[in-house]
Length: 134
Image (cartoon, rainbow, N blue to C red):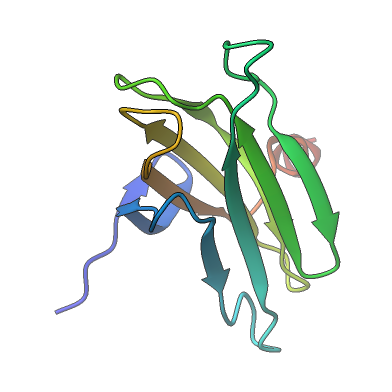
């Protein structure tokens, strides 16, 4: 049996929840983004800034050719903090692009985090769809 989940124009590639081990980063590796075997990674690390206890709304993002390092600062609310609107993080050479939404819950600043995420695949951006309709 194969299950496919969609939400609007997006296909859900993966969705789940992970507890970070001893407050260590969480690494998500996407293999075979396209027929050429393109690989990509997302690495989420967690830190705390005692000078400003509010979560940083825009995470610190460092990109490389094959991945993105995302530092989540002050994501330590037991009710959860995250990005609920999909954020584009990769586009395969053959066209589809990938987005992620996530939520982080934590009961203490220095303890493990509960990281819940959904990764979506879109075939075309909204701009590309508009161009086709013209």
